[in-house]
Length: 254
Image 1 (cartoon, one colour):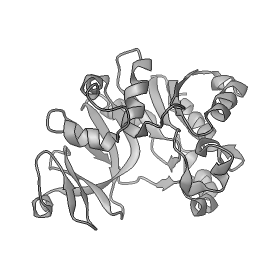
Image 2 (cartoon, helix red, strand yellow):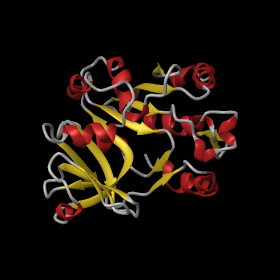
Image 3 (cartoon, one colour):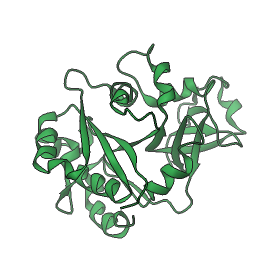
Image 4 (cartoon, helix red, strand yellow):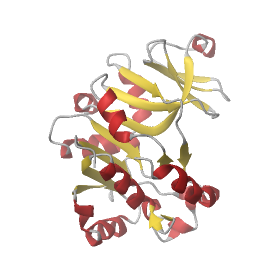
């Protein structure tokens, strides 16, 4: 285990509709890859990278996740549950609700449960956690929706290149985005608790991207791109067929 610890919020509350029919009877977090649930893969990876405190948010088949963690005796580390059974809060609302469970005042990692990658999470956290109020792992991959960054890697907006929609406190039309780098969000980011007070006025359910797009006008929110990043979203049925091979080649790199 890496010798300097950090904390992580695992986003595991989603309905997993793209993984139906598996998620008709189980939460996405417990869908198996290589005979091990996605949640267990991620917790093992986090432990190996020095994570000692984890919060898992739950909604869909929440009790199955709670029972699984109890069966595994919380994998020998400190794990708490942020219970969203009353209402699914989306990514921003999840952070707002779970944030007070992190009591050390330090930034914490936020990680989608269904992302496989070859990133050194320990190095990512300890290199960038003090450089901005939020740090987003991004990459150059094909998608319709991109985050926009300036030459200082600061977030300035978002665009849907299919519809031409732009969201930004600085930009208003598609023609304005030309000078900026278009990068795709990975579902992995570092969040500083200094942002939590700004969430107080937000409704319980909201997207963290919408929050970042508003907050980038007053806070430093940056994107970090890793040239050698390999990343797989295991959110679809057809991705499960390649996830095991990806795990064998990448997930064991800690």
